[in-house]
Length: 302
Ligand code: CP
Image (cartoon, rainbow, N blue to C red; front, side, top):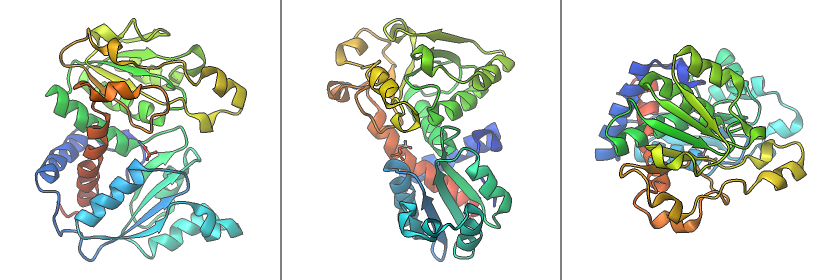
């Protein structure tokens, strides 16, 4: 993995992904290590973020590294018309590794093709969010004690939800049965469903959430992605399509865990948080360990 960019989850083999989870487990036991001393990492966020940006920063700080970058492009020379190409070539002079979130699909791949330092895609439009996938895999394995042969339901905006696209692809390595719950307008893209089919795995599509809850091991809730809708009225019509309530997860499998990449809007009621089946805040914490592992491996420090 040394010097290898991570743009789409499939850029890393199953073995490489498992190696990251293993190293993340070591960081969970010992999160403060000084192995990044002398390294500078750039964090370029052209789109809002709480968890991804701050967990990367937390990961780097706990490893003794330094961060340069921005959390919005308004104060940078992008405002003067500087291209992404020139921004990346410049920032690469100042850093050993670039973490980038950008609203344009394909922007991270483009950056990796021109950058002399590795790029980590922290989300490119509605395309991919591979570091979220790694922490999702870590969270699933930690709570289910395995990754193989699980029933996983994805609920909500499966069309624009980049975390869903990356995680479905990654779970195809583990004989997963997929339960895809969405309004008809927000179904999983055909390209991702084709990928599942080519792996000879089953997927089932639903509109009603209640149908699927009793049989699944993982309930992966997602937000309807307001920022991807061209018609605000369409978003208003659909925004509260799914709302998970505490009583809906009472009569479910013992091992059920509710995951959500967050941020949440209305799709999980606050009352669910007190359930032992709610795991989304622990999931966000796991992001620190996984990102510590990823950075260390890319920089050849583990
Ligand atoms: N899960 C996730 O990507 O959250 P942020 O948008 O807050 O980074």
